[in-house]
Structures are given as C-alpha cells and as structure tokens.
Length: 165
Image (tube, rainbow, N blue to C red; front, side, top):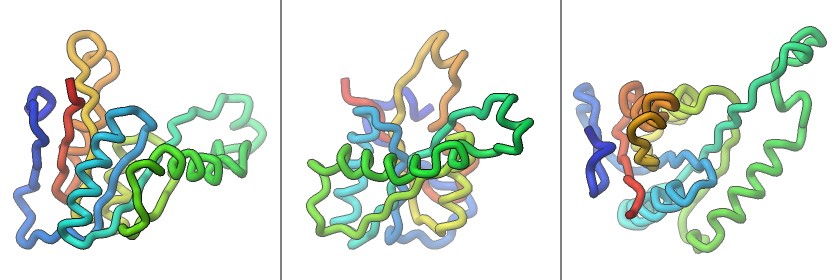
C-alpha cells in the first residue's frame, strides 16, 4: 500500500478517462506533513498553471448539552472560527506561497475524510494532494488513516506524499 512507499504515490480511480491538472485540493491539518504535501502541490501548480484550494476540516464534536439547546455546529458556538482558521492557514503557508499561484482557503466541519472527498467532488478538483502521517502498528489500528479513506472514496486522482524521514 502507498503508506509504505518512500516516494509520492499517485492513485487514479479506474473510471478516470481524461486527466488534467487545473484545480488542486490540499487538506491542511497544520502538521509538518501537510507542509510537505503543499510543496508538491505548489510544484504541480507552477508546472500546470493550476490553482490550489487549501481545506481544513474541524472535527470538533458538539457535546450533548449543546444539542438540547439546538446547537448543531461548532460554528454556531464560535462564529469567527472559520476566519481564525483561514488566518492560521495563511500564516502556516506564508513561507511557501509567493503570490504567483491562485489560492483559496476553505474551512469545513465534520469527519475529515468525508469532507475532503465531498469538497473535491463539489469543487470538481482534478487532484487531491494529501500527506500521509505514516502511522503504523497500534496507532494505525486505533486511529485509522484519513489518507487511506480519501484514496478509497475519492473519484479524482490522489497524490499521497509520505512524511520525510
């Protein structure tokens, strides 16, 4: 599987007939691994004159007492959360981006793998460039892999970038 590869792995769904790279989607979790995936996405964007959308998914669960009061979203509790997350993404990526690539920033709420796959479909992304954290053993069994779920469910190609040793 791609999680053991020392080089980036491109996974292409068998239903893909024509392939172009104009719209890249890069999930950001503020880890050094997502910075490494961003490096590859920037290189692709430059070579193919593509745009990049950076997506962060807030996975915060709403506690049961909030449901009783009708609160269903963390954004209802903290209306400025998305603005702060976008500011943090800008800061996190500022050293890598030079202003020559068209970029956008999106914040969603939910399960990371589902939101990434759903957004890629809705936005008609040509490729997802995602980091693999390289979990193994008990960590992998207990936590699972967002990256593997994205690869499994995404209809567009997925470039998986493994963490550098």
